[in-house]
Image 1 (cartoon, rainbow, N blue to C red):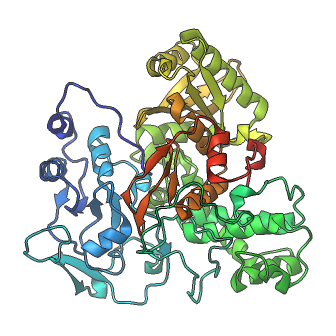
Image 2: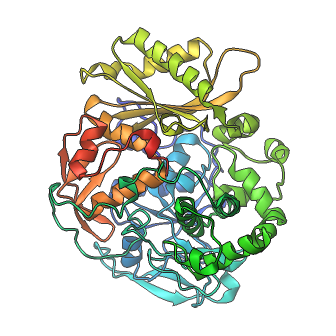
Length: 557
């Protein structure tokens, strides 16, 4: 989900909050040509978006054409529904489909911000075998389903000039077995799991089941201990596949990255070394093409595809740039196309956001993993500061630290108070106190509101000349959300994904705020949000789902 906007002054009206201040650079959005899909966006807000885009030098188009750079949709829109409204099977090629919060953030930051946190869904890359098209709007009544959209052919002369092969443009693909001829994997979800429920295209309504209706135990990652296969007998294979994951992530090929991750998990659980192609192919989540690559590693100790990646300048530079905090694959590719090749290029030539400037300046420190002892020291400083402000608070480091990992990439600290109300006044005071003692050095996102939760993203540094800058997130949550928040922020991502999909199969939903039952869905769209089930502790979340409780160190899948 994209991050929420920073909380605005309470005294201003919604209209005033959206209107741009006179201090904005009038050319901030120069070169940006947007089409705003009106479904779900109130008329007043729609008009404000259009006015602000044009005031900042951008262009608002009435149709999606070959000139369109961005398609703006309502924050609650899904890719499937957007395509239905536009009466197309797949998204228009070469267009960035982004939630309206991106525009609001551009207005707020007075700059073009990274689109990655605001992109609509995660579609799968594939070879384009049909004629590209643009979407035009007929003159109609503009009601809910906008029958005013039709497809028009687009000649090859109108292909987006991105500087990358056209086959790398993303199109939506449902979460089913991959049949592309040249795909790396014919992975399809195993163990009754889909990736996250966000790439499926089912139109069935989820049954309104109750928590008492349990699914078979034993098929779900979230029911299994990550310590079962503590010794990786296939480390020589998984290490190379993990490098492939990094390469695919840096090039925004999230589908293949996810397929490799599932294969890696299966290989790590396998009790003995893989010695035949058939043995690899028999593992869950591993298709013929991935089995070919595993067998190549077994036979030669090398992987040709990985060597190709490592010798490719573009891939190398994209990996460098995507490790900059505040930059995703889309921004990294843009920098590459602008001719930048080094971090020095970015510092001296690129138009960076304030967050990206911090990411470049502290690149090596933020990329370096810290020993868990250092993470514990960071947790202790935050806890002591919080207790000095409000005695009795709970401050718990989550993430890889709580899962018992020897090193941590960052530290996420959850803060709450058992009385259910004393947490409310602590957030701003705590951040200021940590700045006063020179512990917090840089703000990445000062305040990010998510419902009743408040989140700070920043950089900290322990006392001492040899200390390094470290990423720190502080999340203040109400006590009645603490159980679900603890599950969510502890992870791992794979464990959480399995848990959420299990909930979906049971007609429930789970996020960092609450566990809900009676959720009604149609495809990926929630028709009814459901009813909150009280979950005061982590254990209560597991018990309600009928899942054996796993301590944090057994969730490191």
